Amino acid sequence: MAQTIEGFVGSALDEAKISPLHRKIVALIAAGYFFDVIDFTIFGSLVPYLLQSKFATGPEAAAIGSATIFGLFVGTAGQGQFSDRFGRRFIYQFNLLLFGIFTILGALAPSVTLLIICRFIAGVGLGAEQPLCFVYAGEYSPKRIRGRILAIVHFIGGACVWPIGTALVLLFGGMLDTPEHVWRGIWVAIGIGALIVWLLRFALPESPRYLATHGRGDEALGVLTRLGIAGPKEKLTTDVASNTKSDPFGVVFKMYPVRVVAGMICGLAGALLANHTEFVSPAMMHWTRSGDLIVMVVLGGMGSVVGPLIGAVALLVLEEALSGITEYWQIILGPMLLLVVLFARGGIDGLLAKIGAKVRL
Image 1 (cartoon, one colour):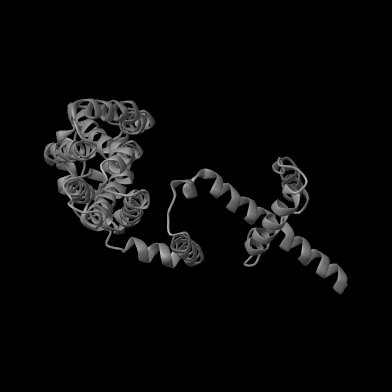
Image 2: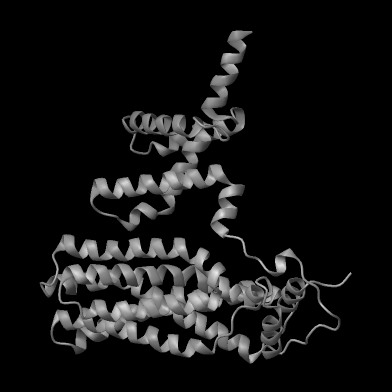
């Protein structure tokens, strides 16, 4: 049976040897990721300069940071839809351009309001860049070293930014006379760096895996040639997967309606919480929050509509009651949760259902 175009491209990339173009692609991806992440991680160091320059008050500085995070959320949520529809390369370039331009415009903003707007738009580009860079790198990486390549990207963009960002703030703080010049200068430098990478990334080819699944098989084979990969020895065929035109959101909603609705409810809850507290703290996205949600679901009962609700109430009641006994109440809650997992796998809701069935008998 003849091999399909997307099957050939996928297996060829998985088994490929590293070429100079591979190295160039990974380097440019890591460079873009570096400037995105350094912008996000360095903000805390810029807050004292914002306050000392009298440009922003404490609450206004919090609003500036929150605008970036909200933009990051929007960009992250939307990039999958757009990159599947318009291509990895186009969206990848667009989000870095958006980030670079509005980072510089934010640095030149004459008012806090304009700075907040610019930081939100820059955050949209930032949010789209981060997940897409790993998709892009992963689609090019040979299977045997894919983990190492992604680790290199994350090391450059996720680890090196901390010492370099700190050094950058210290350098600008020592060189420039006024606090306002420091925070503006750093954002200008980051924006210019992002735009330089944007220009260099015009040399990036589109992902062959994307091309092979969107009716552009000949272009995919052309990219393989540039990577030093030999073409097919026999004629390739096409199938439904060779020209995907489906809407990713529509497919996901059709296949997983309950999960999508649940996610929408969670998003609404987060928006209402932000409106209630009038501030969005990064601490709200700490991994322990996810742990709390898992405890609620396990305690109340998985696979049940009312189980998580029962679990949420039970966890709050237990936390209130046990914290009155000892400040280390988690030591008591842990074994209780373990007992639920071992002997009441349906959670409280499942246990109540069993008791109700026995009573009816």
